[in-house]
Length: 309
Image (cartoon, rainbow, N blue to C red; front, side, top):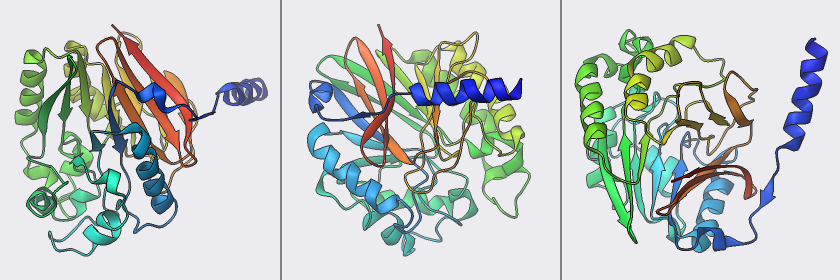
């Protein structure tokens, strides 16, 4: 039985199409933005070439901003707004002129190993780093299309981090219920065409990481997202691409791959697509369609997720 399953898996993986972008008109007349996360490795592994690819592709795509879903800094976060890691992990790596746009980040577990307040305070240092709070929301409008993105702070949602004050000193200091109530309130009043929630940790994913992480997210966050029928939940943390759909939910659960060092992955319950390549994603929207394209380090479209009105 295992051999049969393995053979079917090989066939399934081989049928996932990889499409090189040659016609950038697919992004025309759309509201486009990037998703990038799990970046900060001082330019090593694939970080620098992927950053350069993001820049050159931006010349054609014209992204409005970057949604940075955590772990911009490996491994112990930053100590202050003057930490050299801001240069070696971020400023000098994402230096292409087309990447001098707003970056809207959230905190990842690695930021929680350091000075989390410094990550927020860097907003006053960098023109493009835009982080008004640990969790926040913003609505965008373009040519009659409206999108609301809700950035959330996921580490305090998990007991694993809250109970380890030595490694993650700020996690237990955060008011979990206050944030969950805020998320519920924002989504209750949201009237935009498309609603996206962005955090660092996945709700569903295949990973060797502690199961308690996903179980806590499923218990605390997922009921709110299902209640309000958000379109996409986008996260990072796992260092590979995953697209998951679950019974009873119309949400597309998306794991965006690392922008530097990626990891192996295999299908799990609800897997629509998974891939171990590093890269980033491009989200495009108009009034009738919301699309997320997963891009590998060579500029190939590995997988496309499309929602239509």
